[in-house]
Length: 171
Image (cartoon, rainbow, N blue to C red; front, side, top):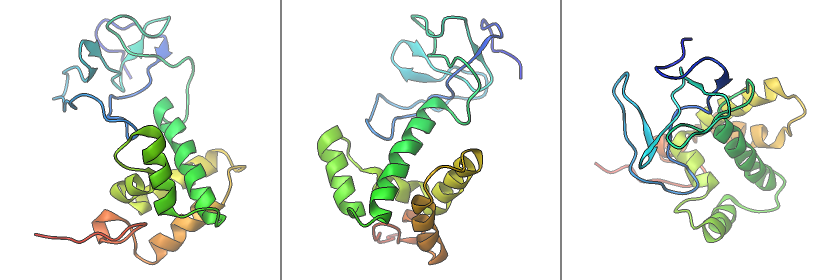
């Protein structure tokens, strides 16, 4: 991959700009090919084919990674949160609804991890978890087993009307 304009090869960037599933940010901008993406006003975001200058972030540049990584940095952190939420439900410690309510109270976010997984699709979430498990076999199996039960039952989340929550498809 070639570095983007003005960015010499060196350190990998953190990845494309995206709204945080945890905390809403400013308006999302869907770029056309070749245009910069904006994550915060006045700040250029990471593009997947560009490289960060040595030293990482600059006043108008992205936050950089320091070595190759499986997945984008934020996605890896989010995966750990999501995985632990799944694990406490798989162990019978809590319910998806209670975990989501705790998450909303403590973060101020409009939705918790289970509602967000339903929006993404539980089949997609399971595929992602399988990928991480292939890279790290020491990860707990409970989250994947729980997701497999839902996926095998055809409960994929919003797209099927049933996941951790029930959704009515209108119109």
